[in-house]
Each structure stands twice: as structure tokens, then as C-alpha cells.
Length: 79
Image (cartoon, rainbow, N blue to C red):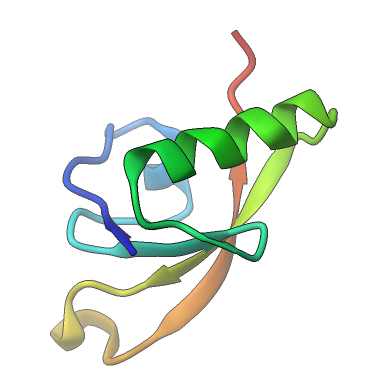
């Protein structure tokens, strides 16, 4: 997975409750291991006309949410 290091306070990740330390395991059912995997998933979804990707996120802080892994829609930012 790819660990989230920072989250913009008003960004799309903050809006859905993602925090630093959480780990992106997959985007649209494809494993994410590198920043390029992350970027490629968004580029492919955008090229296909999608407005979001579905992320499987593992909580990074056990005291906050145990061993929770959840699915979240992440909005694709239009430039």
C-alpha cells in the first residue's frame, strides 16, 4: 500500500475522513504500491470520464479505528 503522509485541510481526502498514516491499498480494485500507481489510477478514471475512484483504505491508527479497512469514493479534481 501507499501511506498517506499529509492531507490538505480542505482537500478531497480530508472531506472523506482520510488522515496521515492511513494507507491506500487499492484504487478501483487495482493494488497501489507506488505514487505512480496512485496517479495512473486517477488518470485512467479521468480518461474514462469517471468523476471518482473507489479507494480501499486501511486505517493507520489502531486506537482510532482498530484494524478497519474501508471503501471510500475519492473525487477526481478537474483542472
